[in-house]
Structure formats: structure tokens, C-alpha cells
Length: 108
Length: 114
Image 1 (tube, each protein chain N blue to C red):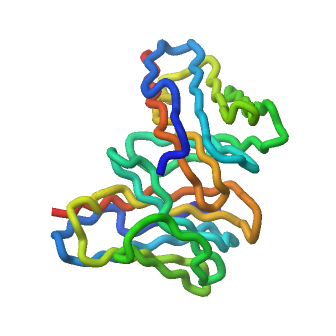
Image 2: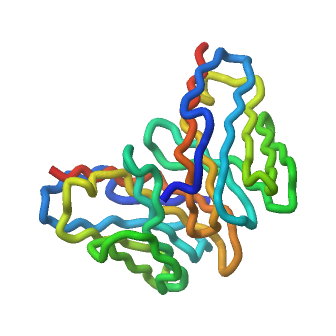
């Protein structure tokens, strides 16, 4: 079953713009992870944020976590055409529960 | 370090047949998890194996089974295939003994049931 909602379901932006995706989850967590998937291929791990962290950065990625609202956001700055993919949040360790995902399209 | 590998990459089967998918984890990883991805249900957890034992199980019928070998390689089997089993099957490995660790995914096996 899906963990929760991801918002928006789809996002289309121009190269160089920022993209923000949001994720909500239902249960208490130890950490939350974000993954990227290109065209129905395998998932690529982007970043893991622990429940005691509020914000984490990795290159052009910035993830925030609000455990009181059971929500997280992923910000991709200065987007590139190569960022076009589906993005999923997931919780649950080795038994991951995924959100429905956000389809991001970056137009060049 | 080589990533997670899955074989075969593509499969076409007919209803009623069975299928076996294989997953080789990253060297040193002892946990292997399997997921099913479909357009309708999204990504769903099937089961997790650690040290040759099934440690977690998702909400799938008994037609879906798996095993793990002493070298941590894992197989999953689906018997009596149904049209709805058409999906991308992903395996993921992690170093984890206990606790929650990053999972690294393979490229997936795309199964089409006709």
C-alpha cells in the first residue's frame, strides 16, 4: 500500500528553474529516503534524512523533514534536462513503503 | 564495486506458467528485498531476506515466494502466473543487519504475462 501522497503528481519546468516535490507519510519513522527513477528503470538512491534531522543537502538537492506534520520536501535547484525522471519518497528501512511519486519533466 | 544485478531483464510468459527471477546483491550486502511496480499499484514491497531467512513479508499471495542463498544471491518465484502479475520486479540490497539502511536497487526485470 502507498505510504501517502506525493504532491504534485506531475511537474513541468524549464531548465535552470527549481523543482519542489512534497511527500506525506502516515506512520512514525526513523528516516525517510528519496529515490529517482528514469523511464521505468531501477531506482537510484538520492538522499536519506533521519527523523532527528530537519534539513539535509546533497549537491543540488535539499531535503526537509517535518515529523510533526509527517511530511518531507525535495528541492532540486538549477534543474537540468537530465533531472527528468520520477521521484519517490520512501520510509520503512528494509521494508520500504513508497509514495505514488512525482513525475518531473525539465524542458531544455 | 559492482551494483545490484538482476536477470533476466525481460520475460514474456503466459498465464498459468511459473517464473523465477534472480538477483545478485552488492558484494558484502546481506539483505535483499523485492518489490513489484505496476502503473496501478505503484511500488509495493514483496519480501526481504537476510542470512537466508525471510525477515519481512508484504501483502502478496502465496504464489509469490523467494529464497536466499549462502552467498546472499536471491531468487523470487511466481507460480500460476496471472495477467495482473505483469510488472517491473525490482530487487534491492543493503548492508543492514538490523536498523534501517540505504537500499540499492537493481535495474529490474520486466515481466509480461500474456
